[in-house]
Length: 103
Ligand SMILES: [Zn+2]
Image (cartoon, rainbow, N blue to C red):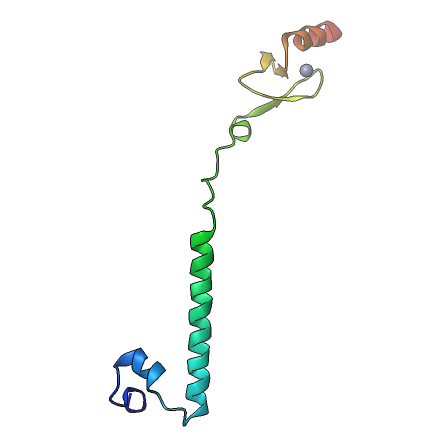
């Protein structure tokens, strides 16, 4: 503490402005301090100027359970699919086609 204060400004300011360069280590530390300070400033500046990303939009298509058409293999949302017993179909036409094929 005694080396840093030197009767100038207290704390870090004293260390930065009034600290002696007698010790090389002190100079290096001061340099490092400024580097980190600039890095932080740069980081904050980048963060401030960067356009904010909109919140992750909900992906309805993926949230909704998908089923596979037993006739053509197309994946369709279950809400839009047609069910016949254990099978799902993308359209009424495919449902009927599959029934005809199996029937
Ligand atoms: Zn289909």
